[in-house]
Length: 261
Ligand code: CO8
Image (cartoon, rainbow, N blue to C red; front, side, top):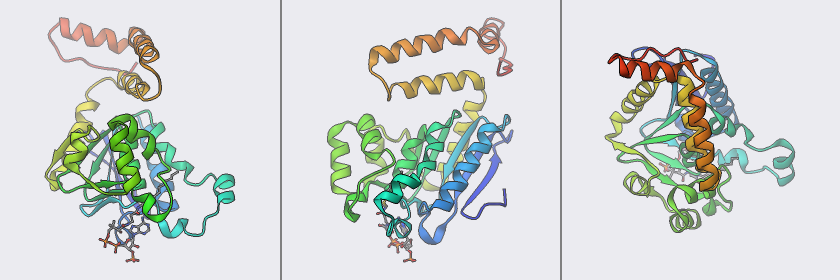
């Protein structure tokens, strides 16, 4: 899609069923200025509406996934303007997307860049990736989920240390804490993320959507409520043609042919 200034957007994979968004503002290490976030949001919305796309990959460059919100843009922002203008509200597009999103992270994923990666459903990281929430260093705090999602994913002590020190942490550390699901050589990360997207795309899209919603519920509710929600979703799969097709294909010893109904 050549209409974009700060990102590249294309369909990739053998079946062109994975949407790839590459953050492309190299001179500012992909700092997430308003324009970039608008374009990212636009690209995600388009992929979400595109029936031929089943999964999305967001990546940056080998030097930087994203070095955070744009500090120069935020410098003269005021509290009242944040309130009335809803500063950086468009970031929610990523966390609200119904299709699976994989972050393929190389280089710096700092501040809002780290939060953007964590908003995605799965993180694949290059060995040399560097994560961190350095907001305290510049006199503010994480504002796009850092204090909440790191605490829920990795526990209080680690989240506190990361957010209160602003220190960076490695891909290995992120992996050890469960923030990242796999680590690769830097030049393999995007390729592997696309393969993962292709693997997910083999399944029924409607079932994948129900499944993603159910896992996300683990972050939003207590266990009893979450289990109840999961059970409802599970029962709900029996209202789909794809559930019948999947089980029939197993019994008939053939590959399923899903219709996303
Ligand atoms: N914003 C704006 N410009 C940036 C940013 C940024 N976050 N990061 C890097 N740049 C620019 C630099 O200003 C520089 O531009 P120029 O050449 O014009 O001076 C260029 O990118 C290259 O950067 P460096 O020269 O600093 O490159 P180094 O390799 O020396 O250092 C670092 C790389 C360590 C990544 C360093 O650039 C750095 O520390 N960047 C800032 C990291 C940071 O503090 N990020 C957090 C920002 S605050 C935030 O994200 C709040 C999120 C709240 C979200 C709320 C949503 C609702």
